[in-house]
Image (cartoon, rainbow over all chains, first blue to last red; front, side, top):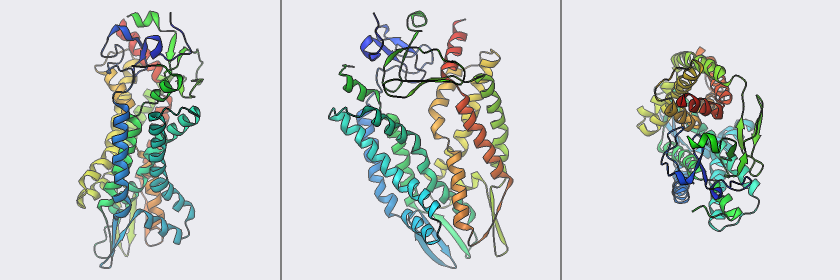
Length: 209
Length: 208
């Protein structure tokens, strides 16, 4: 007898991660008969993978913010630009709105995402299952907003392509940009590796193993 | 085979695994999980036709968006134009080839693949033609979805304009309007896609 209102796992069912078809755990299919993807009760190695990807992006935050993301050469003089420098420059130009957008996309969001995912991981690790709805809202935000952090990379890409005026003015990309793109990509991968079902398993006390 | 008879009236929340009776919803309605609030299913009016139409429109728009310049910079009589591809190549010339590859993937390759995959699946369902690999195509689309970043790129172009406008003359090209239209079409196509319906149709067709 299958009861609704419980986790599917506790009722002997599992849903496909890709097409969400429901299967009986006892049937021992390794792949979903509907969409062909590999079937797992929960995402395999969700916790260690998320930890590893999250730590990678945290380490990359350092070179991303310390190293210049581009070099602005004008009339023979080169000036390195960092992410924070770009924001300050916009503030000096009086463009507060744009300065905030860039600050949010390149510093607040990546750091906020890392903190958000850390909260998810730590509370799951220690079984603190309070404010579940809020945590899910936060996770969904982290997941949705992740790609917007690529904004700064695209700005540099456009500047590098446009400002190629020989010795008059020239902008070239620098290693900090690669590190920053790494931060964005690894946090996106970390959010994808995490399985929110795990925190609900802990919450309702169902043993999913 | 068992699945269709046994669990068809049930649905498990994709984010919290809560087992529920499958809600019956009308066009353009959404059903949310009562426990965690995630969207369970979201029905769209004429999902297959609209997805097909929008994916065709996108596949047409992607050419002018990539071929025509987005911006032209004029400084002391010199001009420099920029396309999406040239902004990826800029990093390559600076020796940052991993970044060049990423920018190329997120702004050209992934958006193009997404449109092609969506076209493949919706065309096959619309005309009941059993094209090969459509299950793989729809799954790939779902995984690629968030890695297409055209709208982020467009905002990047606008921020660059603001940074440069005080020191040089910038002329918008046809490309930027095509890019805007392309973003509109791809965003609409992903919101028109009712994955639950698509998977059901694929399963039905495979059973016949």
